Length: 337
Image (cartoon, rainbow, N blue to C red):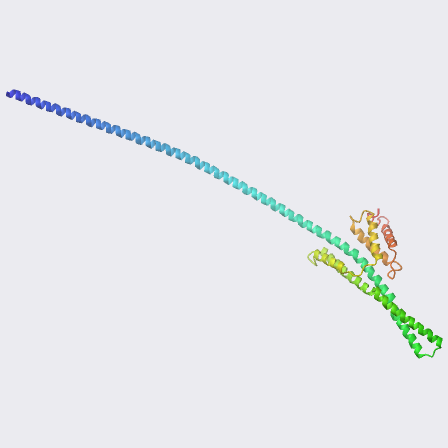
């Protein structure tokens, strides 16, 4: 081989090496470029992915914020509605409570007024009943006291005194036999009559019955005075219930019965007034009529030793009530038109 061929071969070899090195460098550059492009693409993809993820996160956050806002508004609205409902309920409860209190207060006032009216009616009715029982007991007391006095208290000591005088005359004077016999018979008769009067005194018990009616009269009078005090000032005196209880006790304790003539006269008067349709609506008329009847019985010529006829005194009482008090106003005109 010649030197030229060697040189040419060497140059060709160098050229080939140079080309191979260039190709390799180009391949490396291409690979590097491709790697850079791939890295850029990867970075871009990663960036796009990050941007998409960030956008998605932002959208999710926006959705979550919107949802939270909606929930907050819903909760706020629900809270407002709850508060409004609670306020309305409170106002309704307060109104109901106020209405209930008003109704309760009114009921209490009505109940108190009704109780006072009932108590006043009870007092008036009890006062009338006491007055109607007071008068017969007063008349019965006068009747029995008078009969006890004239039938027993006067005759017994008088007859005893006469018997004693006759006994003294018989023992101290010189008398004829017939006179002594007459005096002896008279003394014996007086003694027998005294025994008879003493026995009748025990049987009739006018004195005891007079005391019982007097006691009943005093008790009723005291109850009547307490009722008058209670009407004037309810804070003073006893209660209506206590007075009623004491009145019932008085009725139970009465042992002596009012004479039937007296009780019949007052019952007959009630019947006479009820026939005028005024007894139940105007009970005070009956009380006043009882006063008139009591006065009529007391003014009777035979009273108190003897009781008058009940029908006669009732008829006289009604006739008296029908008489005018003056020229223009008849007495009890409503009862007897």
